[in-house]
Length: 100
Image 1 (tube, rainbow, N blue to C red):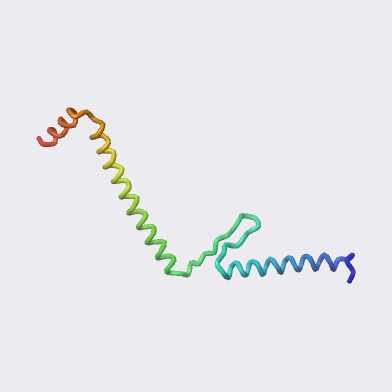
Image 2: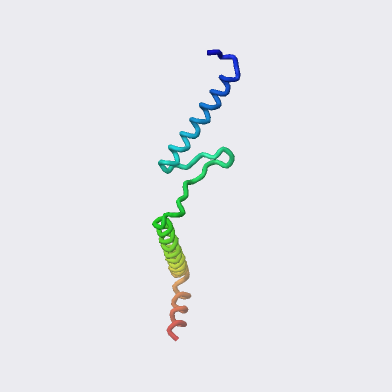
């Protein structure tokens, strides 16, 4: 075998390409993100999976509910902080105004 010819370079390029293809195939088969040379990595998306779409929808709804609860709790905490820091006389006057 002659080490000084174009055949050696072609063999190196072929081996590298085949290794990259096999590596990408194994990663895709097992669900790992594929590496993209120009823009980082790409995620494996399965738009045909109805369970995944349903799960995303449920998580989105739960997120909206929790966001609403957090905002209501923040409002309540603000009221409690105002009551705790305001003078007693002013708080008593506001309570009397609400009774009238």
